[in-house]
Length: 195
Image (cartoon, rainbow, N blue to C red; front, top):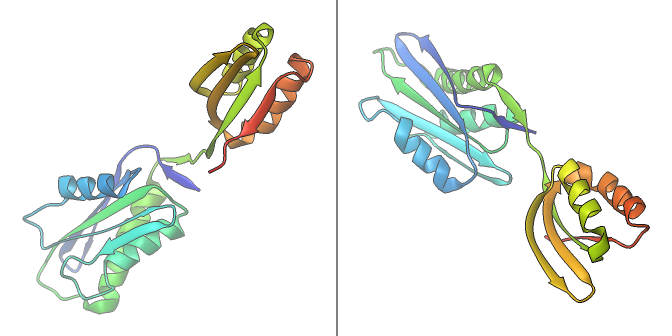
């Protein structure tokens, strides 16, 4: 799966109606709605939109016949393999009716082409883990975490040593566990946090 690296836009004209798709990376439904409010043109005929964040999604036809705008935009997001993305397609009516099929093709096609041309970035799945280790291994543990691209979330200490809570890319965990074992002579323990 991918998300957008930056906002993207694409415009088309179909039978004198202008369509402008604007897409952005998002992390929440509230962020998607704020994006739609920001880029939607109140003077336009319609501002139709859709977003997907994992299993959460919504679409809106904004007055177009049911299923002819929001759903095709959502289908474009899914069809292009995106997640964490919102797309609004604004239409300025040109005086010629497009019919249901024409609307589906125009809204879906404009959104799909916008996403196809957009700069993608892979979605990195992060996991959290707790690493317990003796004080003597502190330097080695911190160095290995930095090399794995881990973010330190928290750390606590007791008489036996330290417990470090970290967040890191899921695909980096197996190598980190092996390196911790080797560097600390199997004294460090890594436990993946439950979701």
